[in-house]
Amino acid sequence: MMNYRGPEMAALLSGLVSKLQAFVGTRHEVALLTTSGTGGLEAALVNVLSPGDRVIGVDGGVFGKRFCHIAEAYGASVRTLAVEWGTSVSPDALRRVLSEEPNCRAVLLTQNETSTASVHPLEELCRVVRESSDACLLVDAVSSLGAMPLPMEAWGVDVVVTGSQKAWGVPPGMAMLFLSERFWSFRSEAKMPRFFFDLERYRSAQKRGSFPFTPALPIVFALDVALDFMLEETAEGVFARHERLARLARSRVEASGLERFGGEDYPSPTVTAMRLPAGVDEQVLVDRLRTRHDTVLARGQESLRGKILRLGHLGWVEEEDVDRAFDSLELALREMGISSE
Image (cartoon, rainbow, N blue to C red; front, top):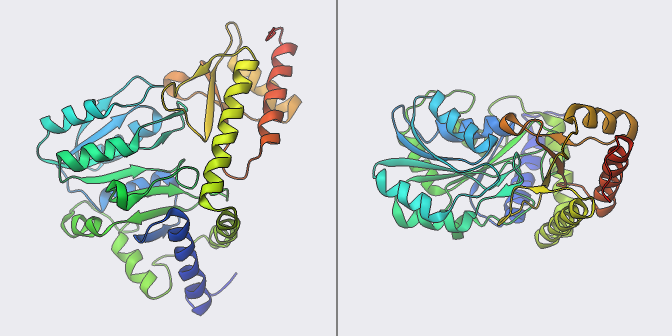
């Protein structure tokens, strides 16, 4: 424990914000919320929108769809651009939808869709938004920021949301929001209800060196330490390591005789997905991996349940971890009578 209303927290919080800005490469303000990544997305939306506002979102997987659903839950009028799960949205498709929605208040994009192991071409999509509208541009970077570049100023992004348990490699429980100057003009006009997620409260408290509500102190401490390691490795080094791990994972999928799923044009650097072999019961395989081989792979979600497995390789992961996971997977498949030969 510490006095989270005292000078100790003021010093810790100031240093933490500076480290986050340095790693991401931005001067934009940072808000730290004790909540999940989903809570961070909700906070972003309720500080930008009013009920009835026209919004464009992309459904390219579980998390893109969720971003749209949060806006709908608060009464926004959402136009969903749906793409086949496992593929990436094209800039031309987004430009077409924007041309049909001249009064669009906000555009919701997801950089890295972990449910499908796919990346959307965010730089090009942001350029389309900035060329075609004055909408507030919100990006779900929960599973990407810290593992891949996202230069907010250069791409014209207004709000970026990330989560502590992904590329930052610390326990879950904190959302970090990066907020541009344009965001605050949208915030001043937004009418959606908010209390805990009112980002003006966090801004005011941060100026006093504190939080508006009780913070999750263990996550604050852990993130501070993690950022020291990440800054020592450098952002470029961290990004390169994630790319190496992703290439290794994709090569092991091929060597195992499995078929990779998703990200054909823009594969994710943080998660690799593979189709289940014919005749394999997903639940039996996942249970065998967990109980006999001390290996946990993520199952497919929603419409992909029972069709794919996913291996996350983000945060504090090295090549040895990826190789061990695939060694276990190959062994478990052989035990079940499935050979990669």
